[in-house]
Length: 104
Image 1: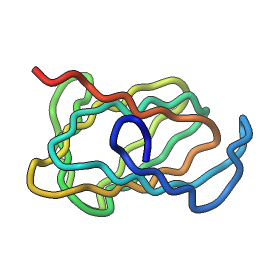
Image 2 (image 1 turned 180 degrees about the vertical axis):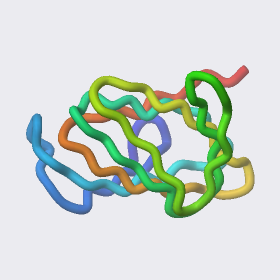
Image 3 (image 1 turned 45 degrees about the horizontal axis):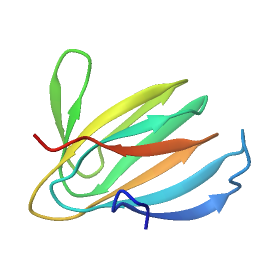
Image 4 (image 1 turned 135 degrees about the vertical axis):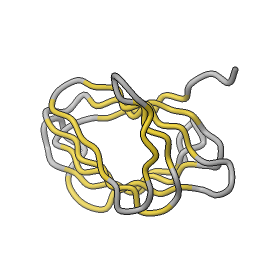
């Protein structure tokens, strides 16, 4: 478990810089966080749960099977449903961080 309360399991790949990796992230209920990519590419799929995903212009409701991604540096703003934990599969070719947003 990370200091953010999010659990991370690396499924495959290397943690070396620039190497491909796959990870499963488990977010506790009610968390608001940024999934910050330092990688050239990051792809994520929501496996379980409900997320409010903030884009530059709107807030989108994501349900299981929904996906998002980025090329280069990017912070994906995510707010998780209060009812249950959520799981996200992440595939990247570099580092990513999880940064909790302060509670209002």
